Structure formats: structure tokens, C-alpha cells
Length: 331
Image (cartoon, rainbow, N blue to C red; front, side, top):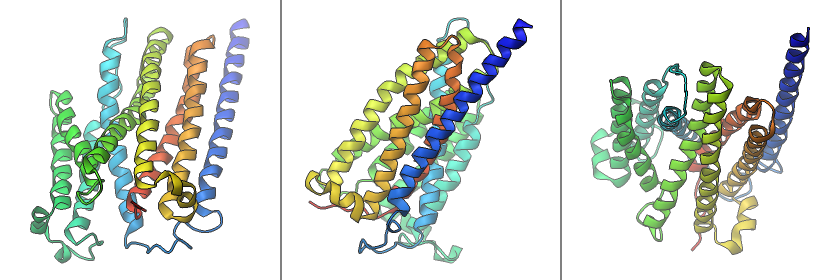
């Protein structure tokens, strides 16, 4: 009878935790919708032209970022799991092969856009594959396509750890693509984007794979140890993500124009949405860390951690849109 009562209490705590997590997510979602669809849509009233195919390009970039995060995070957590004393041998089925394959398709779609002069192709005849070799953006697009293909083959091989090299190539290519040579100090911008992408991929993909691993282990001691190791690393990653994100934004929006551009440009409005979402994710991460340290059962931290994963998925979608919008560079 006492066992039944204990289970009832545990279920009640879990349901309560999930309810609070849902409430936080709703508030964060409302905060993200306001700058996007508040007084006007993102582009309305800014004087900026709506680039053709923005929605499709944003979707492809979001898929590419998600695929990259899943593969990078899986590599990280497998390494962390091996260092946990008494860790069970059971491990979740790897998603890297599928993720890298999806990333390959997304990169191929983005390369086709570059091959048609940054326009969405109407037919295969519009795609100039040979022209990709003649431009910097084309070469970087081809590098991403080949790197994802190589990563998928490595993940499917007997040594999945080797996919770290082609995945690194994808991150470097994305960092270089985001900062053309015409930009002021492009290498500085690429370095900031490189650090931002690495840390964001480890944070998002790592949390997802930690939760998948905990479902397989079903042991509080080893699971709590793994979650604790990830939480300590995630705190550092969040600091780096915040610092690099702020520096990158200030490079594109000088301090004296930030407030104006956050409301008067499409890029600023979507960036504001991303900031609101990231702040909500940070609250969920802090909540999970407090539960991990103070709760009688440390694994109750999984409830806010799951909500954190969902919120990070929205952040990825917003990030994809952000990369497809015109950048308001004002030097």
C-alpha cells in the first residue's frame, strides 16, 4: 500500500512538473510571436524586399542545423557515457546515419538554389551545377553536400566516430558562408559563427541524446551522473553561445542602432524572437539543474529537460529563418 502511495506521489510530481513546463513553453511561444506577428509581419513596413523563396530556404537551413546538431550531440554523449562509472552497456539506436542523410538532402537543396543565382529553381534545367565551381558560395555549398554524404557513410561504417571530421567541415563551411569577403573583418565574423555553431550543436543534440540514453538505462545512479556531466558542460556552452551571439549581433547592428533595428527590420524582429526563446530555454535549463541538484530523485530533471528540447527545436526553426532574411549591415 505504501508503495502504491509513493508511486502516486511520484506521478503527481511528474504531472505537475510537466504542467509547469507546458506553461513556460506557452509563455515563451507568446513572447516569440509578438515580435514576429505583433504590429505587422516581419517584413511589413521595413522597406526591405521579400527575397524569393525565403520560406523554403529557411526550412532547408533549419533542417540542416537540426541534422548537424543530432549527429554532433550523439558523438558528444557517447563519449560522456563511456566515462560514467558503472554505466549500463545499453545504448539508444544511433540517429547519425539518418540525420546526416537528411542533412545531405537539405544541403543539396541549398546548393541548387546557389546554382540558380540564389533563386529557387523552377526545373532541373535552371540548375547550373558547373557554375558552383566558379563562385565562393558555390564551392562552400558543394563542400557541405560532400561533407554530409561522407558523414553519413562514416556513421554507417564500423567507426562512426570518424564522422567528426566531415561534420567539422560542414560547420567551417557554414561559418565562412555566413560572412562574405566583402564584409568588414570577415574572419572575425566567421570565428564567432564557428564557435556559436559548435556550442549550439553540442547543446541541442547533446541534450536530445542524453534523454534518449536515460530511457534505455533506467538506472538512477548512472543516469543522474550522465545528466550531471552534461549539465555542467551545457552551462559553459550557454555562456559561449550568448557571448558569440551578442558579439555577432553587434557586428551587424551597431550599438546605437540596435533598439531601432530590433523593431524596424525583419532581421531584428526575428533576432528578438530568437532571444526571447533562448531566454526561455535558459530558464528551463536552470530549472532542470536545480532539480538535478536538490530533488530526492535527480531524474525528475528530465521533465523540464524534455521541454527544453522542444523549445530548442523552435529556436532552430527561427535560426533557419534568420539566415534567410536580409542582414541589415550598417557600417
